[in-house]
Image (cartoon, rainbow, N blue to C red):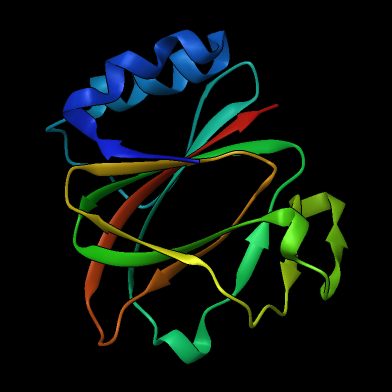
Length: 149
């Protein structure tokens, strides 16, 4: 798991060629007005642009992915993302291969990441996360780049 500001994103380009392509996309889209929906990038990499209201802590959903790395970039707004290593996740609702998502019922300890405008988080397959949370309804616009493992 990585949490940083977008002005520091260059230093993560060496992780892999596909992560570099996702970072290039984030850098090129800076300052542009993006419509909600899917944007295909290259080599199975795609971005989803979404706008939503944050949810309360009691409604958070723990998730993890097996086929994709998530690069979640906050265009505007603020949310709390829970983070815990997947080894702690014991109570799964089952993996949905078509959507590459597994949800968990997890009540244990975890780290809270406050992700604000201009920040990003990268979640690898071993990183369970619970995005979209805040203690009140906040408007958010976020890009999630899905990077094949």
